[in-house]
Image (cartoon, rainbow, N blue to C red; front, side, top):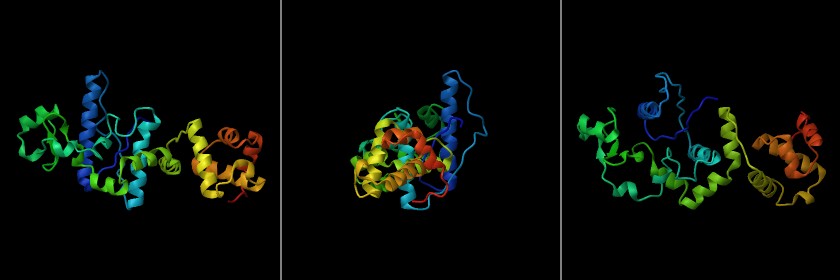
Length: 244
């Protein structure tokens, strides 16, 4: 899949499109400055409406986990993320000027280029465009009342991450420690907290199927995490009549 980004925006469809177009132009300017070709004018995008609080929560978890998975920084530290504003008092303490109240010349100086912004978007003379112009901070705080809960969800909600990645046709990668956590969580939620040694052969088979179907783990990953020969794991996964 080509290089791409995921963003969760608050606003009308038209406002979201303008935010995407603004980001595309800024990325192109950054690429040109670094000696690369800009993004094409018809750079593809998909706009999807979020229909529920549960979906919003899951999408936020997925978007924040992406840079974490790639080793680009913990939640809130990634350069291109707006997560730093979720629990920060900085945005409210900074000077905020509506873009519509600034002359085009002054706005171009602040933004480093001639960009036409919605009149209600807020800018700061030092930072530029304020992220909370298109991020619903209050909604995030309702879903995750404190930073600890948000961080825990991003790190531990493996099932949510895999499900969304699978729907988007993307690859969800888990490290060894994460796989151990996934197995532990599954034992706790689906098998009454029993240990691997306490599972019957039938339950261990169900566990293998769950790890593959719900988390996308391959036969080798499952074999080394539940201590079953990979040949047997492959046979179980290939048995179409298996249900759980």
